[in-house]
Image 1 (spheres, helix red, strand yellow):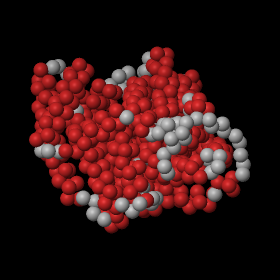
Image 2 (tube, one colour):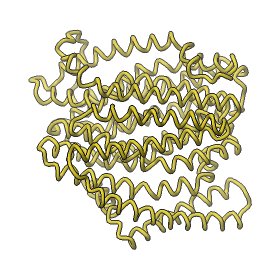
Image 3 (cartoon, rainbow, N blue to C red):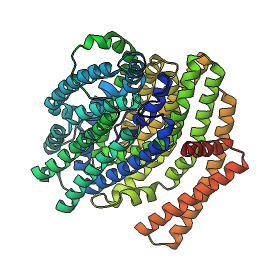
Length: 563
């Protein structure tokens, strides 16, 4: 699945591990990866925190209205095109080639990077121009069949303003890759914060000027459209520009070069082909999802904005926990695969699977038990009404069941990349996306628009589970036993601890609902008291059940912070 969030933090966070796995880590001007671990961890947390604040401010400004859903849809398109052009091959192809040039070329890979960036500017520029010209066509594909002409016009106008972000998404990702291959990881982690701050400022100004009043599409003035569209575009422009000072510090001065044959284009195409296929299939699934969500929006039900808000909550938990585990384990797995130390490879794979499940389980419980207070506390402001918060809670409940399968499936995808193998994940993605789309279409037909957003998330959860199971089976055939018995035993203990934590959380929430009147204050109390009770209960039960993986993760965090 490849929804764009505002910072693209997941790919950025995994890149250092890919760099280490592709070649010996650079230890020159940029320093080692370990030297920057604490900075990266803090940067990731702040980036995701400001990113979520950005999401909340957008929801308060636009609400889960046709305008909010039109803006969310317009935001999806640059991310989709970026993923097709670059996102799928960045970590698996581009970074390893940059590292190889860095370690093997006499100039430290500078000429290779100059050529790659020059080619990227041309291809990204041409693609961006085509996308802007095709904005009305994209609107026709993504808008619901029941959408009005005013809604489609608004979506097209926002598309004209936001689609140029394609160019800057791609350029920022490549500049971050250049920095990573030179041992500098801090700037790519912190630059997205600039993006978030700019967008928060733009939508804060929108609320101040227009009072965040829910409007119909035909009531949107040119000034309002320009403010939210150009504000969104300016955010990614500032993020891209924020990387230039770091490039200068590592001694990189980009010069225009057109001798593209020296890039080894055939090798790029060969290596990136399967990764590209993976992304194409994923984006087809995303197109179907956006269309279905817009169909629900035209009927006054939860649409793209609510679904995207909930998905970003899922991604925040995955990014903070699971991506950290993947980043720590991927270099070891890559080295073990290169040296055919399959026992070490499978041991790390098993450990990563168990750690991800154990640490994410209480977050899943919190999302399920506290879905309504989370939705009310985080989103019920301005134009985002209580009814919108009520519509969000079942989607978040469904996301609770998607979190662990998603993170495990992502771990297994990067495990294939460590072999290295981009073909198998692409082939696995075919039936996974087919099942996802089939389930989502079935939910739309069986339950109608009222529960469609939750049904879309359920379809995701089942497809993530399928991806994890199939990938695990194929990895076992490829590298030998992956410790399935121990994995299932840990999953079982974590499930028991989760049930106990859920019972305690429900009890605390039930008591608070008897004591306090229905209000934002009660939702806040439920969130903090219920979350604390769930966390304490889960940790206590984990100790009683001897779930050692929890202490292993805490020890890993302590070691990284000390370094």
